Image (cartoon, rainbow, N blue to C red):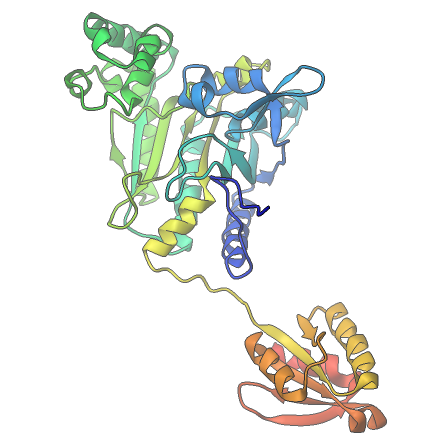
Length: 423
């Protein structure tokens, strides 16, 4: 019987995993500069958390979650996104009581959604996201957007389009909700069953429907921007002014609603323009969720965040032919000739690794020529050669692969020699 990787998942092999490590390290460094701290939450949670946190009218909850019962009969779900878990942890661990506020967190980890696998979209995918909890200041909205735009910029991506919208506060959303119901209700039987159920539960989600997006009522549906109260208008204008001040270009799209129920006020998406990326061009999405903490049992707490797929980010880099500056070379490859020399080479390799150098040796008893070829395949900067003569003199022959220059030095001096040469 042969086994294959499950549909919608992938093996990330050496040669590719270095790209992931580079991007993840870039994200971690950026969060360090913005003073966001890492949080790690379980890969599965109580199902009710996502039903309440993500929203039971969303496609994620209705169609895409991996849900199962454990041996105690409890319903658990593999996390489909990161925000609900972070907020649950924020409430459970009473992070709102910390003297330093807002609480600024980030996460990088696997998420799970049962959807049709396609280019850049997997059933298991890795999401990077940030959450800022405890501030209702539009400054932090702009900061969150600036952070993710800076990540893309530092990785070399261009042809990006930042789209923003305001979903308004509770008063504005209620007014817009009433207008949407009045707009769609007379002809709701022409829409899909999902939209028909959304009319009563969350009519804003109708605007995000993929099935009925070409229906004529979609094009002239009431826009949220027409129902913003004065407070929401002022808030949105401040966010736009802050983005302008940071020279972050954006487009306002009144039809941007996002796919999760917990958003209000600022919502945004980052899309990639250009050929070769397929029909789904969104790289990142996020927004403000001022009622989510209360929904999960915490105190009234404003929040904002975003999430992005590492898979789609790497796909964008590939489409734009961007090569990341990866260091894939080996500092030193130790070559030995003879059994006694191999014992010495093993000890020497260990010492070099202890000193912080990347180092390897032969484990297949290859001839001298084959070991040199192996060093070349590893793109080793230096080789250190030990044979009978070197053992007798307690020396090693060091060869710089790029120039071919070599010299014989005492074994005890090898570490310092290589460190000076490599720095």
